[in-house]
Length: 435
Image 1 (cartoon, rainbow, N blue to C red):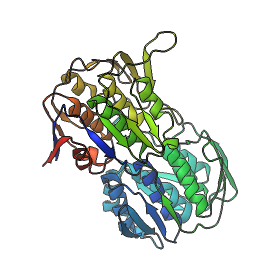
Image 2 (image 1 turned 60 degrees about the horizontal axis):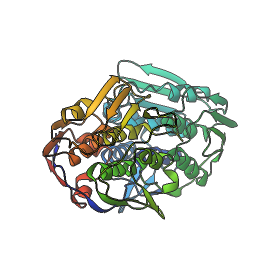
Image 3 (image 1 turned 30 degrees about the vertical axis):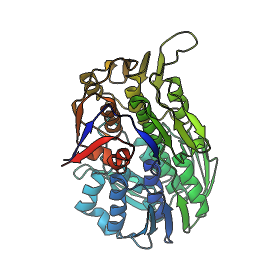
């Protein structure tokens, strides 16, 4: 198990480029299974989760070729379907949350799929009902093998249908889309997720020959086709990384420029930090954050305490609430953080309290943060990263803290952030990786 040693209290300075979006990468790479022709991907992030998925596809028989930089070529001309029943496949799926995204393309193209109960962050219940209910609406039959923790799906044929999703699940919507592109007739998905990652998946599939309309809305219409062909696709910058770097600049009082952020795809994220008092300037497609000694939280018009809560797009992504919570610890004013989707994601606040933060954990979903206004600096501490997003939030806290911190289990951070210590060291951070 590796750890980071961080000497905090140092201002950062310079430019940083966000990596490709992890969540989009997992979706579009799985979508390459829908065609036997080559698909070229650009801006693929070199992170643990994505690399594990690429390795899994290779084991399944997909031809995988690195093209240099962050570009890859995938060709799923033939697949070893027997491998899906192996213990190795099950173990690999169990270690990778994104493996659930194999369900849709396997079912759509081959009319059968086998996926293991996926692993990933321990952030509370993450139910899979929407995935299975959606493809069952299309005609798939589900068998659950409790002994091996695997889900087996088969369909003699898939037929399009109107469906109203019980939740706007991003990965659930992606799976249903990828299965429906080959369904006979028309599929209508209401209450579909409409995050930029889903929009990117739909646009890529349309370039491959799919017929998807309603992109960027929560009402998607998919006319089934009989085949898809190859394409070339560029993954968006990771909005979670962009938000993480904004929070990092605010907490350390640093002047940073975040390059090539695809600003129009950031949605409400810049506004959330502005409400915290963080100054953000848009310069073409870059974000410039000037050094600030203080930032003051806004209040609502009636004078009530500012609150941040997650919501389906175009609401605030839950992946940034951990960062916003940390930024609030040094703001002037108080903030209520309401994490609605996951009941275990706020449990990392005890580590921030040990560092001197003033936080009241009301229940598993809500925390009140009383900001220090940079009048009291957090102190270094020994911590363990429980998940990707809490990990980067603790790293931000450690960079701003007085003294030395150690963060263990940083493999969780590696799952979502590419060479984070090297990129931060280039900005002046004092950070070292140790085994």
